[in-house]
Image (tube, rainbow, N blue to C red; front, side, top):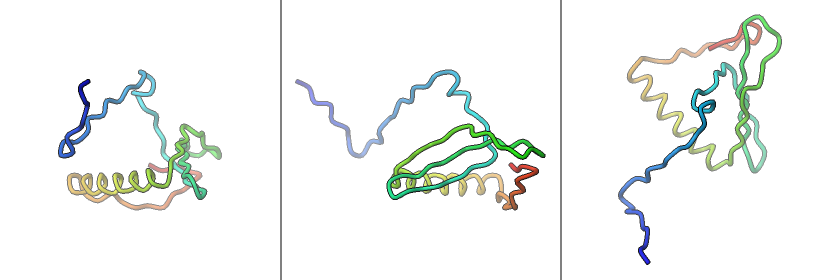
Length: 100
């Protein structure tokens, strides 16, 4: 029987499968994060300007280990983005007027 061993020096190629709706993505302009001892919960919301309510678009539940890897990936991608396009401005969030 042939063994299916990965070369440890070669990165794993991951094939991601998704349906058409998921592939199109969703827009969120507000996010909330909470956690327990065993998981982090990310709520992605859409807040329309001048509206008192936000609509939950997606909830992602993740382990602490994966969340820390996700943070590292976000920080690295923000660094690359800012090297290419300039600094992302930090601005206060105004819940009644929305933000980007």
